[in-house]
Image (cartoon, rainbow, N blue to C red; front, side):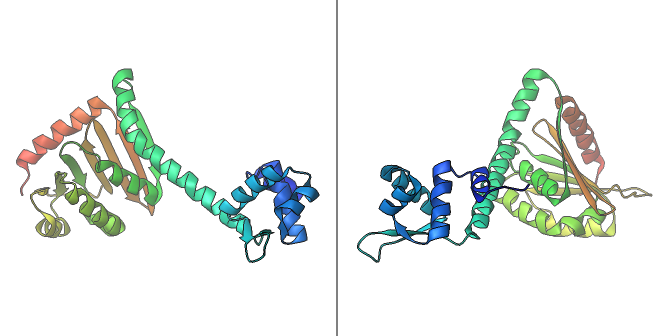
Length: 255
């Protein structure tokens, strides 16, 4: 986007008209006391002080008290980049809070509407979201995992998640096809809160997936051809089906 004046740009990034006028005056004229800024910008002195305080708070103006009368100067225009970065971080934090809140709101909405709700995600952000959501589980988590294909791709994330889960005392049961890697994983990580059983089969296909069942939800993440895809599904019927099949397989698998 092109701007005809700096004033337009400053207003577009969130400054009020008075704030934009004061900042531009200081950029063009250097440090001045509030009284002179008021005269030169035709803004009342009380409003000048109010806006200077706000501009100082967001890092666009610096106050110098070394003289008898305080003087105000504009920070380097690069400070505008920092302002945008802070706003971006604030938006990201808000988005994270919304995603966390959705884990509570969506099941309640789904319960009264009787409609399945699916949330699709891509990349490592999706993986992290799926794992973080399991930390809200109010019952044991049931998990199917293709350890041979997924462990190397998400080992660091999974390790951090496991520490959080264990700290919260959330139990998990894991079913994996019996392979040398899966057997080694089970031997290393099995515990009271992490029960692992292996399914024996003459032919073990790679399904590049981990699937979680808990709290009326089914979630999964897949990794194939260098791409992560994740989904969080709120569906009581699907949850009941997967929970039943998991428990049936659990009885026949070996610990």
